[in-house]
Amino acid sequence: MLVTKEYGLVPSRSERICSGVNGTATRPAGGPAKRRRVRAAVGAVLAMAGEASAVSWWLPPNHSEHGAGMDSLFLLIFWITMAVMVGTFAVMIYFLVKYRYRPETKKAHYSQGNIKVEMAWTITPAIILAFISLYSKGVWDHYRHGKKDDTRKVARLLVVGQTFQWNVVYAGADGKLGRYLAYPKPTDKKWPKGADGKDFTFTFGKYEDTAGPADMPHDDAVAAINAYIDQENPLGKVFDPKEDPDGADDNWEKQPGRPIYVPKGRPVEVHLSSKDVLHSFFVPDLRVKLDAVPGLRGIVRFVATTTTKEIEDRPESRRTFANLDELAALIKTPEHEKLQIVIDEKSEPKAADAKAPGAWHDKRAGEWRYNGKDGKPIVNGRMQLNGQRIEALKGIGVKSITMVRPGFLDLVCAELCGQGHYTMQGQVIVLSDQEYAEQFETKPEAEEEADAGREKAAVARQ
Image (cartoon, rainbow, N blue to C red; front, side, top):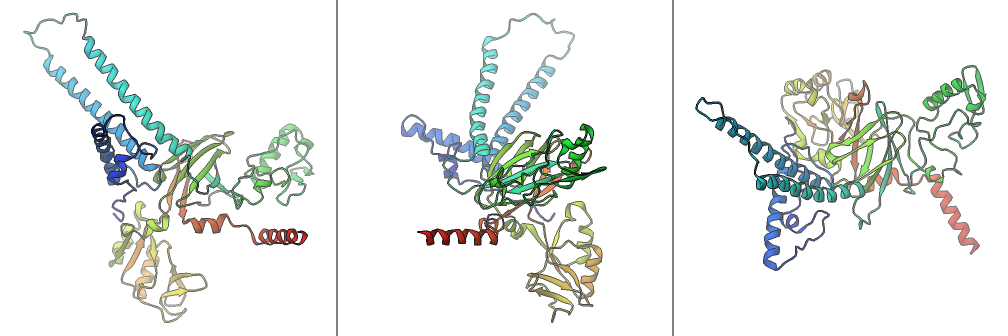
């Protein structure tokens, strides 16, 4: 396998012993000796849970701040239920053997039971469940609401599920999301404003340039609204700047399916909803999961701790193949078909110029590529390989190739939403804080010039 295992962020032993569920210092009542004993006991439990989580023998790698608490809670419940299961089966087997049928045994007789035993097996589970409830409350609050004293800037985005893709909208420079999923009704006399902010007319079938759905009979109006949604405004965005000033700078697209970008080291606030049926937004590597319900707005918060570029650069995410035939066989398997080729300054053989065969750096595109014998590119950096491309690379003298597993995090729908449910997949890409800000939180040049003009006018008036 290309990737053997990855280690999540696990607190040091001292942090695990001295931290409470919410990350605040915990001071048990009593003297110093008693506090040391309690800390040692709690620390031992959390250390075992944390170390088991770090080995990632069951769970996928964790790349979020709240994920360590979730993993510890998961493993704590797992080992408790495992112990109960093994103990129950052991007692069952013991009694099956001890009280098996034998001719010389006496017949069973009525028993009043044992009150002490009954109290023990009632009170003990109650104590365990109460402990798990209190522990999970802190983990849940950290996941859904974040840290109360967190002063880092929040990155807000809206994710809308639809069969069978995901839509994403970024809040823009003002950090505020606009209004979406606002669709016309059959009784509306006017269609919503167009993307240019002006009045909009819609032609549907025999009805030309209708001012609103009310211009048509009810059944035709419903069909026209569905056509309007599919063709003009899939997300139900409110374009009128007077009705929705917050949405003027949002980064959005009509068509669903683009990757979801989030920043590293900053709180991310995902507003979640659905256009049609029940979906479930699930990113296992970020320990994020919440149902997307039509008509409701769910919110999840998390902080990513690793960029996808950092994941790609890890030694366990890369592998160099000296045998290209082995690579050709490997990429045919489903688990390796998404591997991408790495071309950089170390790639051999080098091309003498842009038209010569070999590795060449395309300054205009800002990427490396392998040229063929005819000077045309065989493959660009980070592209997926196939058998034909591998043969072409062998033809120009390439003897070794480095492959990387793409660093994006998988987004899946964890709720059965139709026959194409299995295809409802997406990619979550974690950028650095600076990259995210430049791409999604910078005002367009026209707006910056307008703001600068307003500032100069204000100064002149003063």
